[in-house]
Length: 174
Image (tube, rainbow, N blue to C red):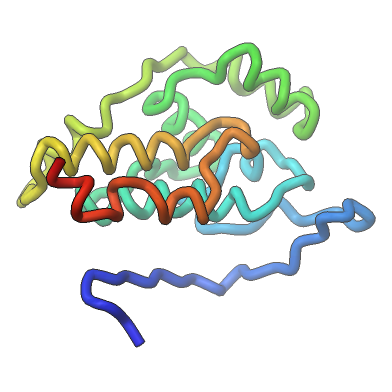
């Protein structure tokens, strides 16, 4: 039973069972390209449910603006789109990514012009047909940024995301 204001999004076309024991290698070719986390683009076989949190951040942005956040035509362009919006990973983030991704694919970061973090709140407010208050856009922007962290363990968890003020009408109006 759906409650008022509840949205459920599902795409099980490439659903996989994750091997968290790392005895078998997970395939990095999961998730539709626009919503694919960087570790998947970089070919990591070590991932977890945080790839879904990344996707949820992309979907939330798209629901609010009616425009995909990272519409790359290829995996390389996808990574470029991500860097243009989020800026280049910090040294600490690169150090973590190096533990899980091959050096050859990580070299993509050095070949792409460094972007600067974009203010998602401004993009939400400027979207066609915007009906959100500045406070709602700021809360949504904060949640999206917490979903879209370069390193998977730095991302907000699904449980934490559900407790975010964006989903609490009392806090949105504060």
